[in-house]
Length: 139
Image 1: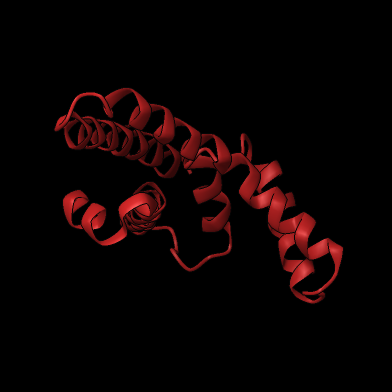
Image 2 (image 1 turned 180 degrees about the vertical axis):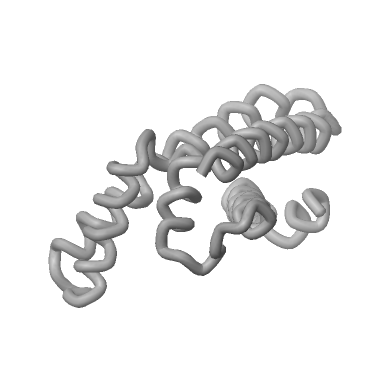
């Protein structure tokens, strides 16, 4: 998958790969929530996703960001919409920086990037699965 993405997107590969990974991780969390008897369509799953994916450090911070984003939907052209979008997206900025750092290091070693990316994503998904199971098992 990573190879096909890199051929299709070239320099935009980190963005495309990060998007695909986030999509798969969200699906994993929602499936685990359903497996433990939680409604995956409940609004609280969005809070769970933001906390489990590390976008926000706590459920309260995630709820605040979601409420700002929801309120800003009513006023799309105004500054509150930009502020709410920034508050939701800003914590994600550290993840692309990590990908760029890895790419800079492995650029000098051809063929290492796919292996490094696969190992990193596999480890991240495994940790996410453990956190999600712990979260949904206890509630």
